[in-house]
Image (cartoon, rainbow, N blue to C red; front, side, top):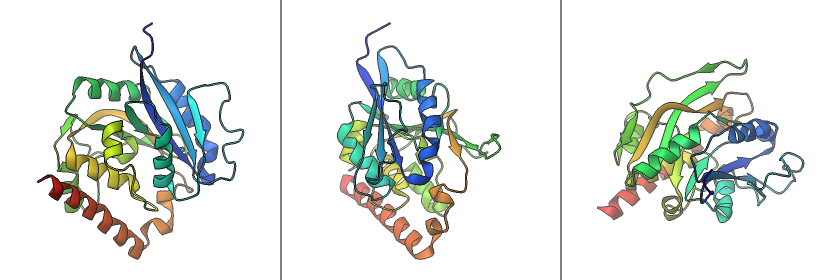
Length: 250
C-alpha cells in the first residue's frame, strides 16, 4: 500500500440535538475506501463549550481532531475548524448525516483528474425515520457545473438549489479565499456554494454521496428556519455576496 501523503479534511459541526448521531457519521467515515496515497481527517467542532463531545468520539483514532468554541451556529463552528485543516480538500459532513460507500473516493477522483474544477457535490438520498431512503427526481446530469449556473437556478426557483450543499467537497485554497462559511444562523452552506460557483466551475456526481437524515430535531425542520423576516435577510445577503464577487471579477 502506498504511503499516505494527501488528506481530505472532513468538517462536522455539532450542537446538542445532533450529538447522538455522531457514531453513525463516524462509522460512515471508517467504511470509506480511500484511493492509494489518500486518507481523511475528521474535524469535529462543538458549536459551544459545554463538553458535548466528551465520551462521544473514539479516543484511539488519531485521524479525529475535536474542537470547541463560542456558540455562533454551524457556519461559525465550521469556520473555526478550518484552523486545524491539514488536507488539500475539505468535505462537509453534518453530525446527523452519513456518507455513502465510495463518496470520498469519487470526490478525490474528480478533483484530481479535473484541475479546473474547484468543488463537487453529489446526489442525496433522504434517510427517513423508518430507515428507508428517498431520492429527488430533478438532479442534474453527472458532469460539470458551469460558473454561475447555481446562482441562476437559485434566483429562478424561489431560492431552491439544483445541488445539495451538504455534499460539498471543495479545494481548501478556494474555501479559504472565500472566507469559509457565512456568519449566518442558517443558509451559511448555501452562501458558500453560491460563492464557490461564482468563481469556479463545479461537478455533480450522480451516484448518491450522502444519506441526509430527516428527523424532528434537524435545524432545517424548525419553524425559526423559515421565519419570514430572517429568511428574507439571509437570502438577500447570500445573493448580495455572490453578486459582489461576480462583479469584482468582471
